Amino acid sequence: MEYEEGRRIRVPSIRIRGLSIVAIVLVAVIAVALFLSVGRVNVGYVVVIVDPLGGTISSAGDGSSARYFFKPPWATTQQIYVATESVHMWTDIDPTTGQAIFGDFPAVPSLTQDGLGVDVDVTVRWTLAPSLIADLYRKYPAGDWEDRAIVSIIREAIRDTLVQFTAIQTIEERKNIATILEITLREQLGLEPSLVNATILGTIDLREVALPPTFIAAIEAKLAAEQLAIAAQFNATKILVLANATKAATVIEALGEAEAMETVADAIRTAIDSIGEEYAELYIWSESLKDIAEKGGLIVVVGPNQSVPIIVSP
Image (tube, rainbow, N blue to C red; front, side, top):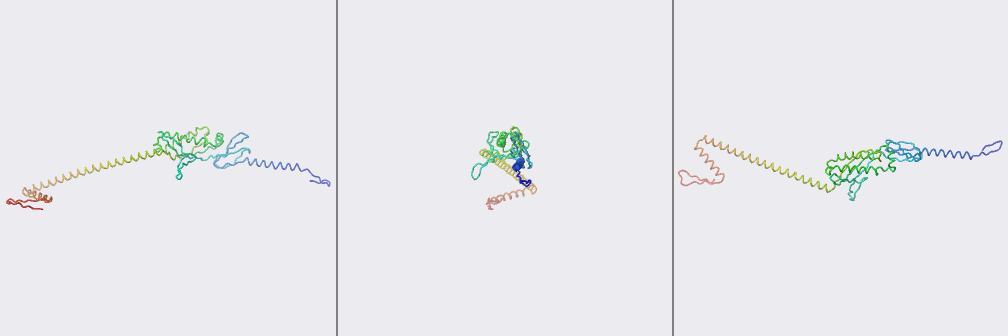
């Protein structure tokens, strides 16, 4: 409102008000556009940017750290986890209810080389290549590559590996099975075109190859029989050794007694030769009487001029 030559003149303010509103709206639009053009991706994630106007799909971030990124305001985003991911395949029995419980998926049923059915408990870990996330997203826009591709490849690799081993070998060569499974799974993940080599295999934990209870019972019975056979063989060997030792001891004792008797006889012969025939005969009679006395017999003594014998009771 202005004054000119004493008169008050009203200046139109509609244009000024309109310009003010336009400026305010423009500032608000710019602020909203800037707000929508800046995003943030977290650690362990890569963001996929989908531009419906430009018809492009791109990615930002590498998962190593959090960062901000720019995008068209109208573009949509989705954060994809690229750090270590894992899938657990196992089956167990709840001791309280007796019902089966599972990991992410049940244990993988497989056949051994000799046709025995086994259940394989395994955990597989992997990561995703950040530079290939956009290509992987084009193949699986819903982000379901784990359920639709990776899990089925893991099952196939397990079955292809187990069929190379017999049931007994699954017990004896567990480490070798795990090594071959890792090699097989790595090859099959690389051969799947829809995964565009974006899956980087980590580690595999082969926890158990569960054999049927009947097969385990048969193995235990066989082991028990083998242990009994070994024990019986040991006892038989022990008895044989003891018998041979007793026999040897008896032979040694008999040889000793024979040698002793021979020594005594030699001593007597020498004594007889040294004391003369009469004294030797007296010695023989004395030893004979001593032997009879020790055995409890009767001694009858008859002198050369006696008609009545003398009976001596020891």
